[in-house]
Length: 595
Ligand SMILES: Nc1ncnc2c1ncn2[C@@H]1O[C@H](COP(=O)(O)OP(=O)(O)OP(=O)(O)O)[C@@H](O)[C@H]1O
Image (cartoon, rainbow, N blue to C red; front, side):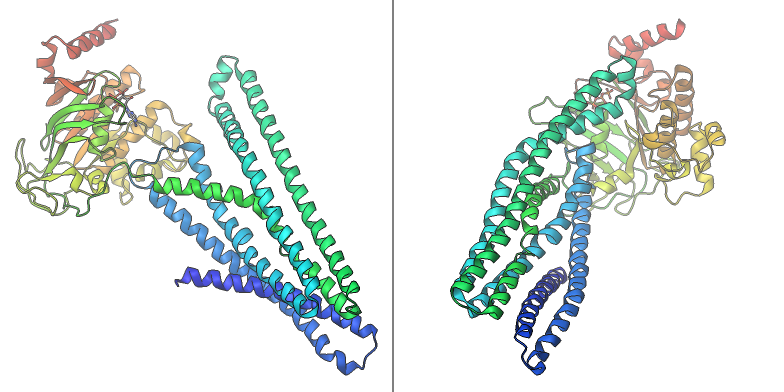
């Protein structure tokens, strides 16, 4: 048995010992009082007096030990569960559950693991052993009374909890949707407050939330009534069983000492059992919580990690995308349908196309966030194996455009570099990463928000990234250590985009990916940012996804995507002369800027 197993055994033994000490205390005390009433010589009572003291003291000590060991086991189990959950969530592509639901799984559902042990398994074992001990004692004193006690214990320990569980299950089928509905209504109220206020829809939304609240409250009241009734019936069973034991004992002429011992041990043997009725209700929720946790853990990761990871080729890297097909769901058309492009060291490629064309999907595939259905992404360097040197691929002049070298890793094909699928996904993201479509601002200082992309970065590197992202004036005003607000709400869209760009520049990956860097910026700022960005990426292997065409004269190749396929490719000069999406967009941009 492992250490966790031994800890559970220890906690269970401590719980059993504490309950048995309680039973023994009451049994001995009952014997002592009734026997003392018969006024025997003091010597006849000495052992019982010592026993009462010993059981009273040990009961307290054992109860303390039980709480200590039980909670130790439960908290450790909870920590392990949470750790496993994090491990299931870390791999690329978090499971389908999002936001509030995932948070509730992380917090409430993992608490259920603690309840399972502290309120379920461990007390149930102690209650079972105590009940058995009382019945065995009864068998020695008066078998008929023991049978009465056994019947009472079965009603309180099995029938009532089973009945309550069945009723709770039935109600849970209505409670869970009602809870989810209230949570959704409240989330809508909180997150949509501005829109609700803007269109005067706040009262309606509030009324809908109040209705959902009333429905949930009614269901919960019903559940509370059922649970209270079951607890009452448990106490009633305890009283009736004790009375029945006394009657049976008197009927059988058991004598006052035996009657008192039987009556009081019967009464006490119910004590650990009664909380099990309430626990049964909680356990219904616990089993649902455990099922939800299993669901998260069983969610397959978005991409498969290689069994034998290949080494990242060394030197400036070339990325070759060939006939890439990516489908987000089996029943949907492919988001990318046979896309090919090559990024040689120092080359800058822009990907443009209408909304939904598959631009972000292409970046996700390069970052190993989605698994391609077919096609390949190959990475080759100028030297074989080893870690790729970080930053500014091509900056040292090595490996000009089109230059390739073999980099035979264990899973790589010699001569043609390695397939991206043969690299661990975090390695893939170390060599190819950058600005994502929905950058997030953490509730932390500006400095820490930036350091996310370079924990080791010194002050100079931070300042340089800030300067290149044209953020220095804002940082001067707000300060490096200003904590950015919840959900980044103290940051404007433009500042958020610049912060994300600063992160990408600070991280300085061998292949820089930029998804809509000028998104949400006004024309003037967007132009300035794109100008700076194109300066900052000169000589750096870059894939730039953008909606704006201004500045693209500078990039080496432009790829136009439509419906997941490449419909045009070439330089800016070539594309503005060719009829198609690019020329149309270029003309409409020019018309807008002339106005
Ligand atoms: N996680 C996803 N699950 C299902 N479908 C998705 C997912 N991500 C994208 N899609 C679908 O794939 C297609 C391509 O989306 P993608 O985000 O790559 O386009 P895009 O060109 O980047 O669009 P935009 O310019 O609006 O960001 C769209 O039809 C989109 O609805």
